[in-house]
Image 1 (spheres, helix red, strand yellow):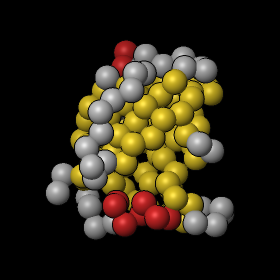
Image 2 (cartoon, one colour; image 1 turned 135 degrees about the vertical axis):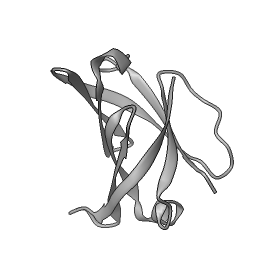
Image 3 (tube, rainbow, N blue to C red; image 1 turned 45 degrees about the horizontal axis):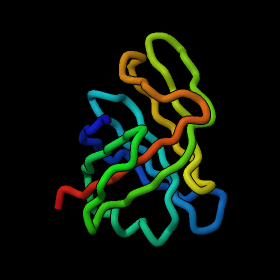
Amino acid sequence: MIETPVEIQKIEITSVSEIFKITAISTDYLNFTIEIPEILKEFIEGKSQLTLLLSDKPMEAKNDDIYMSGVVYKVLEIKPNVTIYGSMGGLQFRWTTPKKANFFEPKSKIYLILRSHE
């Protein structure tokens, strides 16, 4: 399991109605982008930092966590990093990380929690 604080860089609307894209960075795991439905946008707005948890096994979420699960569909290595692409119920995510932190393969399950610090 990976647990790291992420700093929200931007929240932007996508070309798909009621879907927003969040871009965040972490000193440990570089760059993270995820799409969320508009209804979850208020969870993110006004917060500069969240904790991101990623695992290949189900995790226990708290009441105000955003919990999503999905499937990795592509792992692209561009040294020294790896970018993992996945889909969580049709919502896309992308995570760029140092190769040594990658333990996901195409078709593997992925579980994600976004946890507020407040």
